Image (cartoon, rainbow, N blue to C red; front, side, top):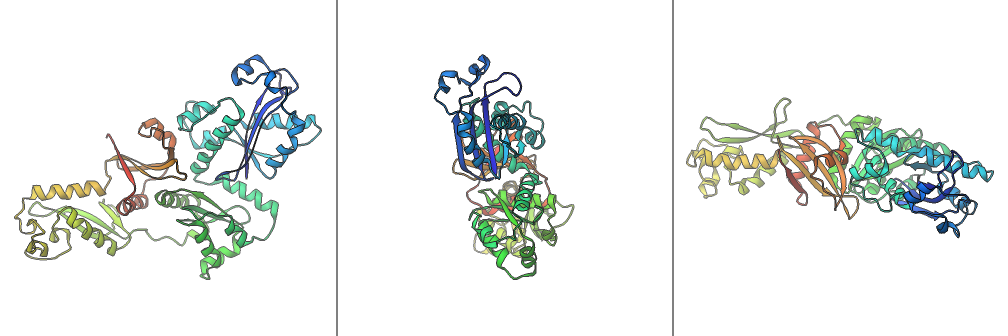
Length: 456
């Protein structure tokens, strides 16, 4: 659990500042579960430059509560939480100073979104909250007011959690929570706290270490299976599980790509048995002696560039049969009807005769090339847009020059075709045969995705 906060102060000498406004959002890693926002009477003068910056003046604070009147609420909302702030050292120091004046010791763990951003979103021109959020497409209202800046920090932190592929943030948080409770995990309580939504889930042991990563369209249902099944792997997980964390993705494509990448990075012990390729067959093309562009299903081979890949030969044949009519292709030249003469479809006038060289090769090949272009993103620049985690959000997968570059989320009102914006929004990921298969197979079977072609 996190307490994401922002504090406005009077300014002045070090450790003599007073709080003029405070905003705290209690965040469970997915949504805000509580909040506290208040002006505060600092009982001291506000520096003129601060008044100009924040718009908060002494007249506004005459009837505001003094810090001792809100101290209990601050303690309660931050209890058992890690304090998160943009430049956390400053906000935490100010809070501790105020509690020290009351003769009360205030101690919490902290996370700084400046430091996390420098690590997870490198090469930004500035890491000030205003400039950073602007470059990432995070909307900010009431800049330099506690509520506006705290809400912007919530959105920034949510993005940082998504970009943390090594999961160091959640592993450290789980380790702290488990060590404090020191209780045998209650499987029922673990399941009750999970959403019935699409995303990636992480099963942790009592040290916070991730022992299994998976994805599901219904996280709650899938974890229930892990904790109730009697197969050998599930039994091992049941003995070791202390906590389950998750990341909602909205899009199954995002979940598949994150699962693939994060298993490779974190190497959880119970994922190590999954060494098989996620695809076995591929679609290749070649020119025959008569100059016709042929398609052929074969076992996936290293060193050979396929048009697209498949989990098994049945799905490969099903794909070819489906596109045969749409692209008016020849059964013989797609390997679906071995014959020394014409294909069956030519007999019933559904093939133009490429099988017997009646249709000119250049005309037939154009249709095959169109299919290849539509189902292979080699040398293409494009964005695949899919569902987001919330109603006003969408996810994106970025392809540059045929290479998978990464994924991210964006607000519906934000311009995503700008190259600099794309580089800031996306979480960079590895391009490999698995990711190519995941993306291509998802595009084939998903009717609702939107593909935006970018100039080469």
